[in-house]
Length: 369
Image: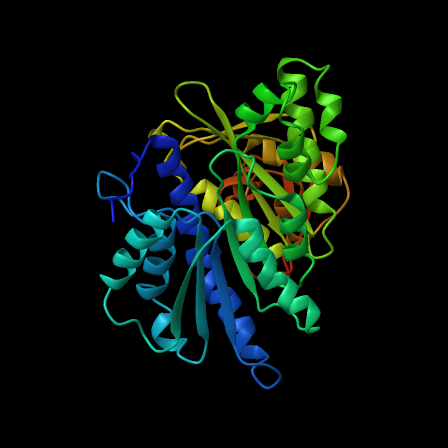
């Protein structure tokens, strides 16, 4: 059998994989504990899916996403105490040569722990994963808690309908890699109708044909997010820009069922080293753009302004401030207290009343000016 073509690990893919690694690393113990908490009702299991697995390794020797997810689990500090949870990996790849190479890479890992299983399927993502969902639906079963990484080669092989069916199950989350520049570039070109209908799960994308530039790009992204948000199990949709050095615009789009998943997603994005050549950008409700960079260079002034806009002169609690931070801004909870509220209190713009203790637990807060 001929050797599969391995591709180079470019900077934007390296950044994407760092996000994937960081998210899965935080997702595993959180979801494992949830699975263990209902062990009296169902067998504790977690399913991790890579819908476009590839050969498992890049030409320079760097691991692909299947090996990254396995490595995160097997070397996780929490793994030794999670022996009661069965971790199931499903890797889907349509190219037979890449499947054979991926099998070799998995075999090279040696004997896996008894609570870890790997299934590698050779087939198209929509057909293979669709059959799994059909089986669960036909039997009336609930899909086990699942994280799916959907990173298609282009956009013609990823179905919004299929992602939506997955996200209709509870405790299922998805990370979707959207090549927005290519969608933007080809949306008006003949022959793309079937692929775009599948990607968006509707024909509303046609409204972008008459748009240009940033307006078209914003419309296409917002439509994708809106379609993903229609799934019954999705409570939060967050997308992050991955801008390459050559100007291409990609998006990592999370479809999440719980607030904790949103917190994990934000932590994962902030953990990416900005020196890889990628930048992440988001806009708060107050309209201020935030450039995501190294922790010591990021200003949290926009977060403080967002809190001020939300609460005005009213008293609020740290829980309310955390809700605002997580749900309505691109910032994460870890940037709220020490980097935002404490400096504001120190310079006298934030009044804090405490019931005989330090910190912000049980405190009441109010902006003075």
